[in-house]
Length: 280
Image 1 (cartoon, helix red, strand yellow):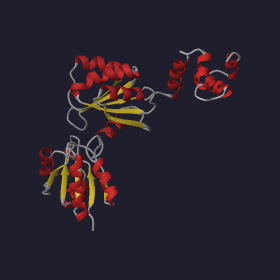
Image 2 (cartoon, one colour):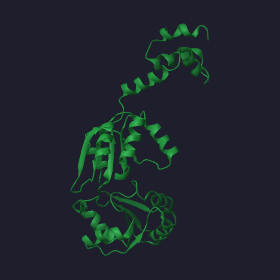
Image 3 (cartoon, helix red, strand yellow):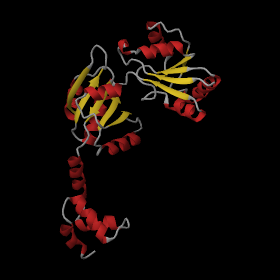
Image 4 (cartoon, one colour):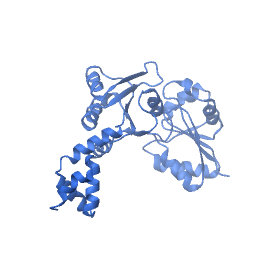
């Protein structure tokens, strides 16, 4: 009979956030796959967990996933843990889970701490809909594309950042998104935990003069529908009405459909647009 893969969330700073179930599972499984065994041994020692560990991290996640999968198929139960938080959320885990599904291995989540969710619910920003971006890409072109996609995002945006890159990232976000409401969350669950509800521009000014310390999460308010409509109208107003109509007609729409869309884009009636179609 095949074993099970347990995805065990671990504390992100405060050891009291470890759940009873997580401790029990880590004691019962045959092997723990840890992102950094040197870091995780302190957690295991604190809770008197004697289960053997093996390393499973970003740099060996493909070949090691095959090794772990073989053990699971043999019937071994394995728990995966990361340095902090929930496996698979901006940490290794996704690749192994994918292989388990392909092989018919049962995957069991053991819930617990997740920095993104803790930051969101305590940020004072809207929580019903959110977009988790983790760390922005290191590649400049990919980062530029990501920021461009976020310009009209209506959901609350969650971004992770290291303290030494916070000022640069706040500057890039301000340039790309404008001065949005934001909350800077630092050192979650730790002694110096802080939530700084402000704006991107004000946060940039503050941290330019006050060196940030500890891991940071930036929670940014999304645009309202009215703000998106206003931005879109501003974009379309850069075109003349005839140019706007031709834009849609060049995509294969007839004049009537193009006129309807132009009126909607500009927030006016079709009658206001019709006179521009006579010479097109």
